[in-house]
Image (cartoon, rainbow, N blue to C red; front, side):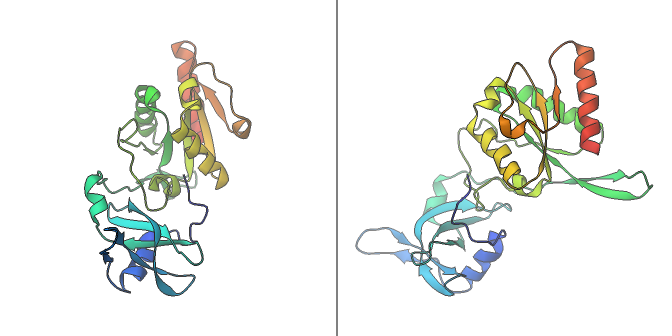
Length: 238
């Protein structure tokens, strides 16, 4: 999901801007009809011909190309549309909204939306949970591309909301337990030491890395589910 050789720059739009100021996107070669894309390598401090160029999109929905410096193997990035982008789906801009909550001191404070991680099989439950949390004053970011047949390649290597959201509500079910994108999402959160709250559905064994996370079961009768929701929303409000 993430590039092990990714440069330390988190804002690839800025890195692309540096590269863009150094020259053109490249041109078609005469010998192999492949597009040579040049980008500025911050580590080498020079313009290089990137290896393994991959068409990607920034969080703002702008096209770019991510590749590897042939000399130091760090990630280089270039803003701009190429022919490789024309066959891809252009995503909408991704922005994690914030809600204003009243703290116990009486002061208003902004609360960034939690990232809701779920698989396509649990979409109905997840969207209802998100709506209930929103009504309870807990902002939640819900991806609309879950289950889509076309995967979006993001400039940062992961969905932008994973970086912007400070916490996660993980819908854990037998289906999501075996879903690669869900697993990669919560592992990204764990690696960045961000909080995870689990909403479990069905009989599922909690992975060892998640055993210390607050967990609320939405199995049982309606009263049990309502109690689980109250406890989960209270935990999200802490």
